Image (tube, rainbow, N blue to C red; front, side):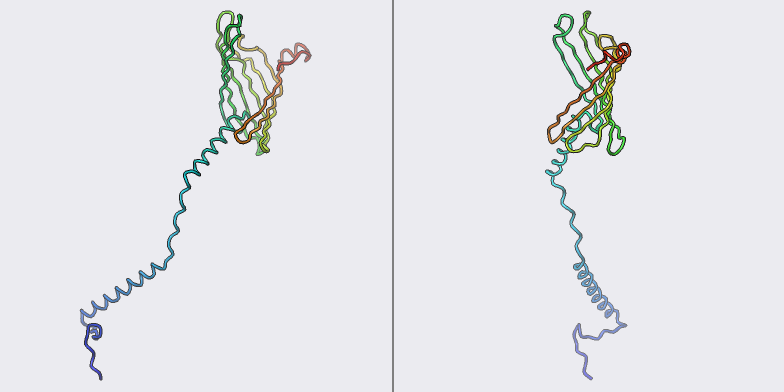
Length: 222
């Protein structure tokens, strides 16, 4: 038999020797550590998060939404709840034609969806006036003018609406209104494309008391 070679790596380990157990444990720990490192290196890396949306794109989207909202606000029959105000100042009126009339129209617009292809848009005009008279200025509200437009779903750049319009004698003073009930048809057409919004609204109202008294022969109020 050949004698065992001497040296730290060639010596036969005694299983009952505590020093031999420590050597074995150290080698096993190094082997497991190397195996774990090799396994982790082979794992696929996590997907990198998507880059944030550029600030310029976000600003462009916000600007487009703002422009679309402004366009709808200018459309009197858009599918948008709005309360526009219109102020008119008319000089050269009154008994001596040297006074000025002040008129503020409050015009709330409220749409109601009747079906996917049809919307009912209510548009009411409430005038608030300062009217010159022979004894001074008369302040108050005028006759209420509600209109009801049936608006089909828009096709392209055009929007159309048709329906009845009324005038209710709600004036707080006789000098601020006509004192008559009136009714008739109304129609509106709006063209909206890009920054351009153009349209026309026409109506014809007839005073009901005049129609009854004249036998429908002298009706008519534009």
